[in-house]
Length: 356
Figure 1 (tube, helix red, strand yellow):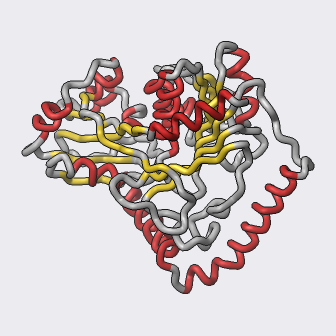
Figure 2 (spheres, helix red, strand yellow):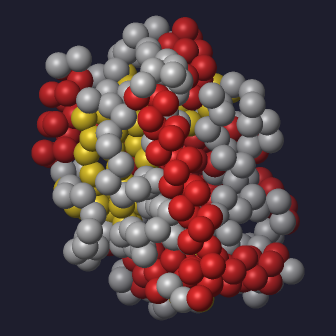
Figure 3 (spheres, helix red, strand yellow):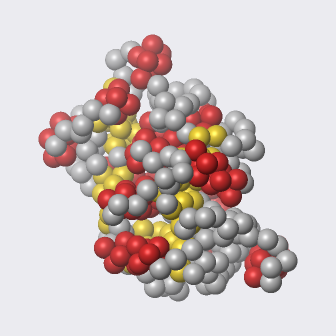
């Protein structure tokens, strides 16, 4: 039943994506609403520029990572890679996020490594576990940042995950993430995939574009930017992942899985990207695409599945003790996504921070 519901949701999303990418009669019917959306977006930006809507400035620099296209472009992996690069450079970053999917969106909450994902959201929990940086979630990102700074006064830069359209939070640097879809048909929602115009002016001092397109060339019509390098980390058993056990050497871990009956499952914005990367490692897969932020309240895999590969975004919602009780003998392998930021991007960010 869960798989059927996920398939229905994926089918509806695919039909909408087809409208956004290829057009058709439905797109024409939606264009008046898209024009209204564009007008409202422009008006809101204008009110902030004129000072009629107030921005909240923080005592430390703010970097916002986001995208202009609806759906998963890779904002959270970019945020993780950026925070790791900042820490390697001697900075002390903290992260704020909305916390999509948590039970109380209005409340502020500092994420702890063993929190249930329902309390804080799957992506904030993943960012906390991967980076070790303090993470506070809240619908009001400025309030979340103030709480983080009060609790961690040594923080010297705030990184806001998915806050590009949250204009009330003043920012120094914007990093806009694009993926293989580019800007689709170039129209704003609901006739197209754009949340705001692809060439919207920066709301901070510096705006950088990054292209999370793997080996593919960026789509035409996008702002110039640097391409990210992405790869899969070595798969690790679910219990070991939660315990922080070091990964096995990559090739040995992949070799151990080749020739076995595997199911790959992903509750992400672009599950096919995960499946394609697994097949590139020589794995023979059945696949199960779940809706983005799938909660795993009911385990979605068929009874015939004996080994399942999942993303880290899914792993934060899978308790090893629960799995052992409900599906004894089922082996879950967690496959991390590793993004490498271009050195030029990191250098530009550090220079902009130093110039504040």
